[in-house]
Image (cartoon, rainbow, N blue to C red):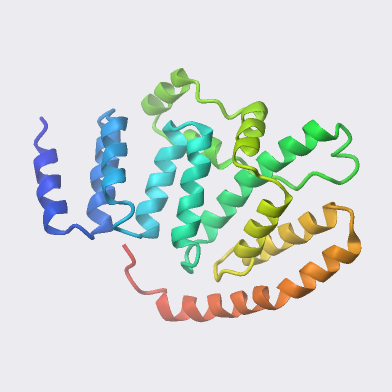
Length: 235
């Protein structure tokens, strides 16, 4: 008992840039009901190992155990660091899903008729709920007892704290819909809906027209990167 820790420590000392080893270490700690130890392992390596696979593991951990505001901040750090990775489609999709929920919560607060007036954005499944459903039953029961709040009210609060407003969401959509990744088409459709929901067709048409070339270039770049890099071990 306890023997894996010295083995992991020797491994990360010898291979400090190995995303595979760091990920295995943190995920093993989580299986030992040591969430704080797992978090400490992630915090030791995230900045020095800019690996999409490592960060994806960390974001799954965040969705299971951390408060909503911390989850938002983790996703923001991840897209800033790895949003240009050609495999970052799921990262962008989940980040935008969270932002849209926070934005819609604010719209509903400000305008009770937001839904019928077309102000709300189409929402995707909540990635936090999906991550918690995928947990083993014993671990899921533990998180349920912690009662981490992902209610509409908490999305509203976090959206206000982090200023998830029109300029912020527009910037996020434009970044998401121009990076080269697999869900570019879906996020472009979401961006179109967002601009059109604001009620100014002329501005929407202008902004969408200005950004369309970046979206087209992103699609072309993704196809090229996919053909060049699909057989590379990125871990």
